Length: 305
Image 1 (tube, rainbow, N blue to C red):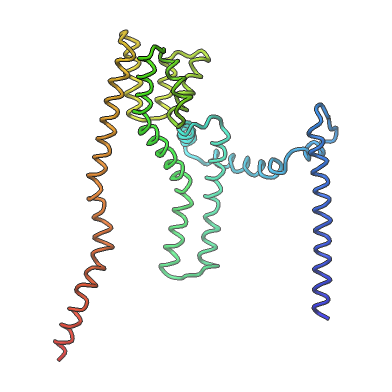
Image 2 (tube, one colour):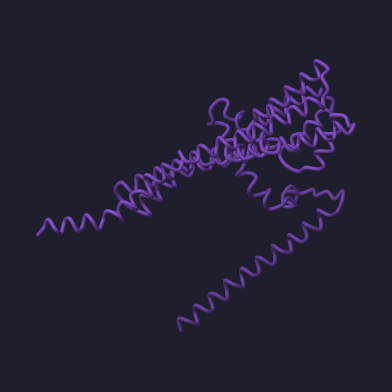
């Protein structure tokens, strides 16, 4: 009797779910058809709201509330720093900053949930519980900023690595007879990457009416890379004093290539020093246990006799 009742209840629930989903699917089809009609006006406010996608109707208010909360409780100047970091990533507009602030507010609001999970659900007890809650709190507080900083550093490293190769292409194009902006345009179309994206934005600013010097300074501020700053200063000085752009580009390409080689050598020389920490705390204790363990056991057994 009990299996029959369970089967009937499950069938009724499945039928109800099917009816709701079919009705929702029919409404979604109708709304999609209405969106395709140009100039179709809906007088009812509720129907106008239903014409919007589900994601916009459900997630947008939550994101807006979290963004307002994040803007209210963030320190002075923090939002400007976040906006600058997103600009360094090549992201224009306020939507990415608002999403980041919403995530930041959500992670801070999740700290009480982490406390409840550690001490009332997991219940490790003692020092382990305190350490677990501390690690989760640090991850929730510093996780968004650390992720954003890591993305910015990766993009800066990509710009730093690609700069000598892009300068070589610029030298070839300029010495072939193209102007500086035409050479940049040709390089942008030939080489994809973060650096060429910044060059493309700089060319867009020039075409929009900004001077080349201002556009290059804006590019340097967005990227915040020392090698790119040196390149921008060299080009601006060449424009000021009337020096040949091709000669300056060739000198900059050679200098950037030498600097990239020096950075690689510096990192290679730092590697043995960085390897000492895991070797001392991880490798050497294991070796000592394997090598000296049997000898210590034998000496202890001999002294016991």
